[in-house]
Image 1: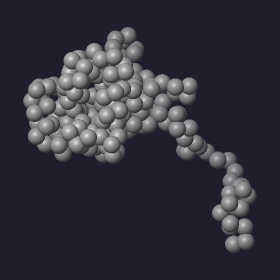
Image 2 (image 1 turned 180 degrees about the horizontal axis):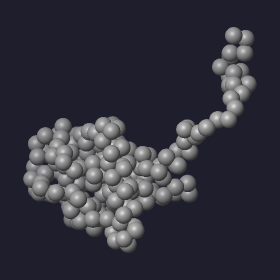
Image 3 (image 1 turned 45 degrees about the vertical axis):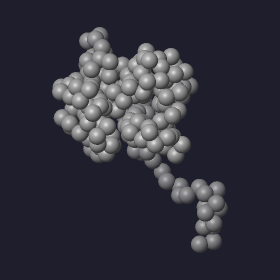
Amino acid sequence: MSTITRRRALKLFAAAPAAAALAWTPAEAEQAQGQAQQIRRDAARRGVPYRPKFFTAHEYATVAVLVDMIIPRDERSGSATDAGVPEFMDFMMIDDVKRQTAMRGGLALVDHLCEQRFDKRFLDCADADRRQLLDEIAFPASAPRSLDHAVTFFSSFRNLTASGFWTSKMGVADLQYQGNTFVAQWHGCPPPAIDKLKLADK
């Protein structure tokens, strides 16, 4: 499935900034989420780790670190990897060459920037160095123009991370969403809400 080389993806990425936009539809995200969760269950049942269908081993490890830096584990819920976001992203890449190029090129660019600054790829950098780079590319308003490509990629990557997390079972629980619940009896709008909206006399 990994038909685009790292070097080729980086060249295409640099030549066409628009390719960095990892666009997707809600239907695509829903389908990828279903596939990812199913294969996670299958892998857990067999007692074997998930094997990426698109990402190389290095890319997949990089994705896992990045998504957990974006959504780490806290007292309320697990991290992005706990929710299966790397698997979700892997399925989002399948059969979409433009998306593959944007992802592979973006990850290669992150490594390239780390090599320029720290003489190491992202995975081999210390946590402080990783965070230093992400601080440079996470805030479009303050990032230098020379990092435009990286900023565009990281913004899209962060959005994809959020989509993967909050469409997962863990992410929905984290939102404490109360919809789709049967209500046996409806007593109308609560008085405090009516007072706040100034509807009492209407």
